[in-house]
Image (tube, one colour):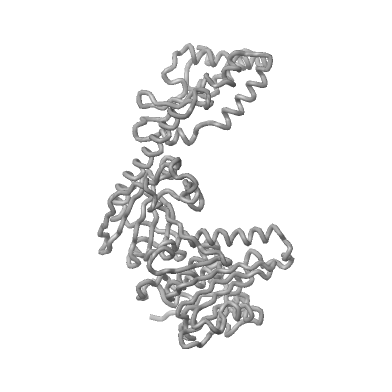
Length: 491
């Protein structure tokens, strides 16, 4: 057969790599993967503000690379997903260093010192690639970056690698001054997010036998345990090992203690993003966190305050990457068909127990500690249905019902109170398996009561200028009266 050799256009490829959707924290986590694979014990990340010349660097003390190794590492997809990898290698596509770096910076410089003491430096300058139409990997780097590298990778360090990002996309603006406080605050805010993210993604390495230490701008990265393993009130299900397509999936489910039992550690255990973002499955690949709180698209599973205490770890072997559809950024995964029924079963049990803990504790607390006048709303269940009522014992409600010299002021204050304190979270918690359906307006009420409420609205409309027919029509369009027959429909 005849054929054409069609090489990818460098400029178009760069645009595609920049558009993969990396956040700065996910991009730096990809660099740390390489440090872990190199056997590093220390990984330090630096954010240095200098206006449009600001830079970011990740430095490790791993075994480093010789010239050939560095050139391979800088080559797009030199080691694809088909390549055999060492145990502990967190790579997958051979794209992480390049795709992560190109998503954040115009210039990527890597200096690596191998165990024989030889240092090699290579640079990708995307403007050179775009301008030349060729993948020109530059030897060495510019003088400014060389000065940085001399500090980041000093001569007395036996081996290691330094990755430097220059001409950062979000800050490489000609008139961005060093004194721009808003931009500087944003820049160092990213450093804080990176610190939290690394503590979450690499917690097992920071806590485990590998004794990895990490810092961000000199601040030690603290591991975050999403399962609060050491808390005495944690509830755990028996761990399971389930064979899937020739590999073993390990699952361990946890229900966290009620927040009232967490004291000062509540926010810490909630984790980055808070309770709602962190509920669900935690998918690990070679101890590296891929997904941090996700319901994996399972049937009828969605984020809900009732399940804030449900967290489930899932360990997936690297050999199952393709089956789990792990992406280039190592931040998404889709469970294979054979795993879904097991995840569904364990997820349902964990969610059910998590809702019970929140609901039970909430009801006890309300009974024991809340006086009759504390809340503007009252919630209870009757006959398998939730009832939500305005608390007529609340002093402001009683004052409005009594009517007085300041009744209009009291009414306005009551309306604001009801708006601001509507018990949405409590309703969601109570909407558990034992509840048949959501509340319906006026369900179970005597018809006279509903008619009385509609009549008061009708009278108010007439007093405010509507004709009787207009007032009836407007009442008839209001929920819930639009669902019922009555005088407002002329019947």
